[in-house]
Length: 184
Length: 346
Ligand SMILES: Nc1nc2c(ncn2[C@@H]2O[C@H](COP(=O)(O)OP(=O)(O)O)[C@@H](O)[C@H]2O)c(=O)[nH]1
Ligand SMILES: [Mg+2]
Image (cartoon, rainbow over all chains, first blue to last red):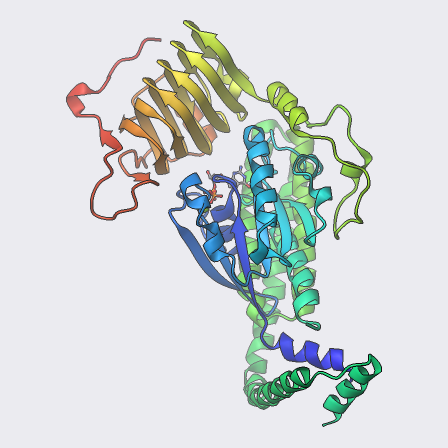
């Protein structure tokens, strides 16, 4: 057994990951979190402060922080950055009006030192809506191809139907696991 | 220890040997020893509970497959059926998919990685055929850019190689798209404006830069955005998801929705039906009363929106600038009953 394999095995025992879910308000963060947890998603209120949920998935313990998207709370986002393994950026694909706002917030976020190294998953949410932009369109608008500081992936999904939520989280887990559970 | 010497050898090969790293490694090995011991315990327990787990996973597989077959049947029933039937079947299928997903989530604890993968794959396939059926029976308009770059057509599953192709600002394109895809009114003063149910059904409605206008939106939009509205009276049918109000002043608004998010708004009355919550942020002088507008097809539109007509939290407003519990926010009030509007112009 090589050293790498041993280290990998040791670290795997810890199997705990911290994911931070951010995005403009109304993007669907809370809905995604609840859907993933199998809760009712028809009565979700705008988030005051934040929600923390711990989920078990594929033998991993996921601590997911859903931080409220309101303007007055955005300056507090950085309080939750410490030791984040993965950043889930949620986009309301139908909200064309605020795409520019969305792009700016994301690119500012990626400059944060404390998020350096975190894997980025962009959820192009609300794909079930007739007016939704495709994930390719959002990839272009958010200039994702310019990102070379983080591993990233964009996935079209719907928090209401649950479509692709697991696929997104699975990609993220694989990417994080490959990164932190191998060597330092 | 062999591992350390192996490590040492490796490090020396690289031309350095770090004492610190060796200490760290010892620490890790100790930790691993501990983990191994725990593992033995766990395996003992696992052996005892294995038979239970096997029973559970058998039950899971058979129930999962039965449910899946049921959904497939619903979908195949859609071909050739009339629109209302298709809508109803799709709704049922969607609800069942949700349940099935939850069932899988709840069962993950005792399923093997392989079983989880298989079930997830099956769910994804099912979701795809549900989408396909919906697309065929109830087609929606596709959004495309006028000139799409090659880069945008590739599907990203892994970080792409650094691209030399710089993506030109997509924002203006999106703005163009917004204009063609959304419906609404903008830059109008002193007029009466109306949209019919057919014009707004399930679409996004956007009202911007309106002054002194009377707006009537009959029907059920997907979302409603109001931006830069001054001295207007805006009434709208049940909105399936959220209403956004931003930079609105001296106006009277009336609508039903699931969530209301109000920003930068002053001296405005809102006649509201909200099934979850309303929030205000950076607002002053906003007042609320229950939604009381009516028009002939309102009940139908409520049904189309999926909103619960009997659940109205219009008076439970959260102020994001007022997080003090106990004391009410000074930025909003309830309109006294005597002062509420009861009749509306057509
Ligand atoms: N159609 C549709 N609506 C969604 C979806 N996800 C969220 N929503 C709606 O969008 C609104 C905002 O969702 P919420 O989770 O509160 O957003 P947050 O501010 O990001 O936490 C709610 O009305 C949700 O029902 C989706 O995938 N499809
Ligand atoms: Mg929320």
